[in-house]
Length: 616
Image (cartoon, rainbow, N blue to C red; front, side):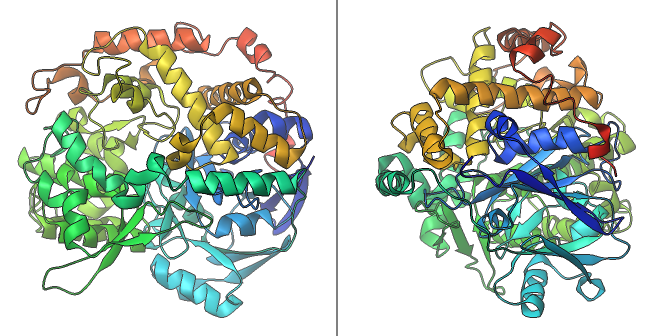
């Protein structure tokens, strides 16, 4: 089959060995690539009950059939592992030049098992695997590490690395590529650190064939033109920072640890203001025509600092912590990228700690003399450093994430620990976006805005965003399956509205690449299949119906401010919507996947792999 190599490179760090495992055409078609194929491979290679920070939790890098085609926004890879934050499936996507280099290794995925005997750089050159000592790199940040590896191995290698946070197994550590781009969520940087890998260096020359290269080039020209049209204007001009002002108007901007839904200093940190005052430069991902990412530079009297900025980092390090100084937010974002921390989990965890301090549960003595307060930029920056290095006391506590930190502190602090299944909440207020509330509650990844675009229904005339009803289950399922295909092809989500017919164009693109006749319904079924496999993995790892919920604050406290003041989301409302979601999925009332559904999805044989694949 064109577009694929038909195999996975499996590396056992403990044994110091590598091998290729076949991926047959049926498997590749069933799971497409990217996050979908990664979900299947995690089910296949991760032993049941594996410790997320133990040697046999696989760290899996996965490419997609569209990489290397020249189609805009397709230079993305997925990283998949069992999450140290949730104990369930964890995955992140990143756009970088590492993606096409991974594709040229002669494999569709790299599966890393075991643990190196010492801190190492894993070098993969066209499938030849070597391990180099990395002791001299310990303590270096992600920018320094990438530069050092390239000096040692040459400029042609592409590098994935961790910072001090990954070395110290902070549960929401990220993996960095391309000078600070992050595969950020679910703690995959901690998994890489648990394997004693400071960096992975990749170089390849093996290319796949394409079934219809001339047709692909013609389509690429057309799609590039559409990617520069009105459908992507928001991303090209202000980037996702534009969300700050609009969410604030809607009463959907989480502020001070979700105690409020509007921020009185929103104008100071809005995309419009930052675009005028912080010398933004456009940053393009590899093979991208949109350029959504904006690099901001501080404008105060301090040392000049620049950082990539998008809505989630801005929300988490700004309004959520009560910080209205954009210069602080830029410095905080830069620190997270350098230290290798997910900005969302970092901001949410610090905001939880600030509220604990507000309520007298964390004193300056508990915090090593630091006074944690909402709005205190110095405290925010100091806390980030403490977390990344697991500083004694507060740093070590917050490095565990909100679920484990709140369990340790107790005193009712679990009620304002804003996570789902252990993954910290993104910047969407669930009480005023009730379709999104369902999407967050049922997501296999935890509190995630990227694996379900359910918020789009809330921003449309399709539903009343402030009132729950039983239509939301089918909507949430539809958006999850759509996102699964986006993340498996892999298309960038910001391109989605440039398609005139997403399913038809995606099927056509897949057929042009692979030569396999493909209908839109084939891809829809693939999206459904992928989400069922994710759920089956979580069930195998101990998921129960009780895990599909939201933080107590979102279900017990009405909104107090903004246009949605007084709006509530009750436990009964959420349970009703969850029931409608299970029904739409064809699952049981308890959210289990019945045997009939497994057969309908054609998953019996695909999931019946020998256990020897997991550990050899």
